[in-house]
Image 1 (tube, rainbow, N blue to C red):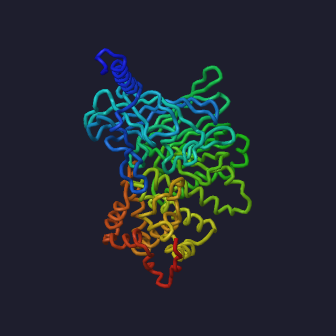
Image 2: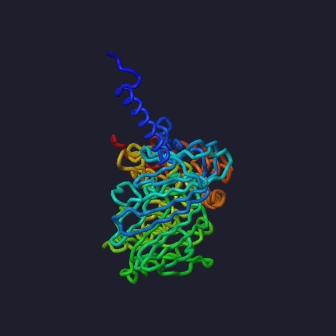
Image 3: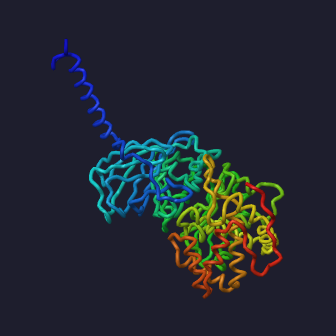
Length: 491
């Protein structure tokens, strides 16, 4: 016999439909976005396709963290002020390794949904093109299990190493170097610990057994250069050229041992200013952390070094000093002038390696010409393994740092050497000064560099640089017809 409209079977179907509708409505209210709209997006960077987000430019970040222990998630609030470059019915933030609890856009609750390493946000009202809007995200920031940049544990706290794409493992945002912004940091931690961050100190308050530290940057910064470190630190202060504040951050127990190295920084800044012009930021210093990163890093105004770098036996002083200059040089090349895309990485690393090599030669280390001749011999092999200088191979899964290969370091410096050989030292020095002046606090591309080289030298350098930057084999070196590249082996 068929069921009537009032039979239990029909009622159960209606109840199931009503329950499903309630679940969908509740999910939207607590943060879900319609599934068809949930997708990870990016700014189509060739090496990191899903990194960054279209539709807006960030003006500022205000980051608040509450730290308890290095193996516990931090409670956090990230406030982003941005300008819409397109109408935004929804938009994405880069974020992972934390739980998003709520999102507000201009003070009103917004729906959100995590997808891959993005969070899709649907504001209650669409943001019109050209409007400035504020996004507030309440979330956690989990330092555990970060194997590809982000928070790094130290013996007694945490430090950040965000390059190339680790910032969104710490806080939500637009994690691509093409979108630079001002930063304010508020970090609350046990009062026996010291907290440092990029920029200048802007206040410190203590309540009970906890202290909140505030820092602000004066110049815009790429997310991958953000730095917060928490631990038992000493913070020696000194003065650099033109009254520049120099603040170093070192393990409290090792401060005396490190002082002879730290004291070299002001003279190194003077040396770099002669090469590239005035130091471009509000302060500088070294952050020496008792951590294992496998690299040193040019976090803006506060370069990160492993403490073991200064205690390894058998390292000549000129070599260690040249590494200090490498990270310092990045503040002109990479920090002040940031890469437009990650394929422009050689503009960072090639320049930093160039000044590292010049400084080493002046301090009694390897001669620049000898280093470049060896680089020339190896260059074809580097291109096979890592791609052309300005077209590096994408990183393999699980090794984002794989883009930092010899082809962009000494290979990039070799391109600069070839250009100097072609246009002469005076024109090359003018080019370097003009590059960091014209693009200060901004971003620039490989094409921009070639255009400026043409302008400064008075000769078209596009074809010459194209063969050096994009060729599968290394072109002849101007002035050194006898230099030969070794036959490469297959990668």
